[in-house]
Length: 200
Image (cartoon, rainbow, N blue to C red; front, side, top):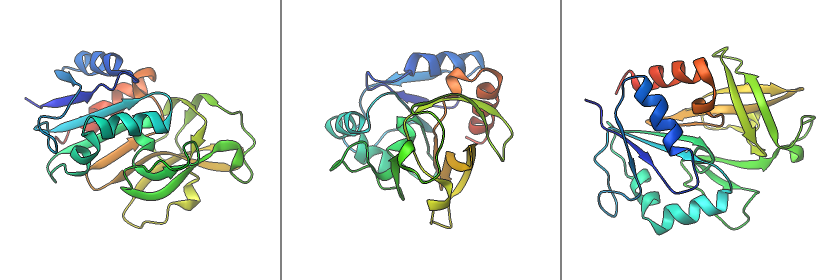
């Protein structure tokens, strides 16, 4: 049995993610704090996030999740959703002075500050990833332009808004993050979770 923990910071869609995983036959546990100050015993940690970059970083620090996420073993996996994805980066212009986990060196920028961006802010609605060809539901005001991902060991997919390529998901080692909401994306969301959890 796969041991899946969904981190609940009181600012995410933990129950919606658990329900979707349950429909697929996975029993996930919602947790609010790590097993110890720096570790967790789960095979997979999922962090759904809604809202503000600074607020989620503050709660992660206060509950000792930041250290725990950075200390996961090579055989454990981490998935961040929406703001849970954004905290993988070094920083965000949404929260000057607040540092992300810096697992990916790039920074998030408000969408309408990205050169050439002509879409709405917030970007709300359905977009199709260029590589996976799946359509997912997005709602966000900050993002990363695909051309700014400089690290060679990162795998990523992206959506196009006008002529602008916005990162939709990244993977580095055993860390993965998605800007979209798989739990709100119907069939594509189910397919995403099936694929993600298949090798745990």
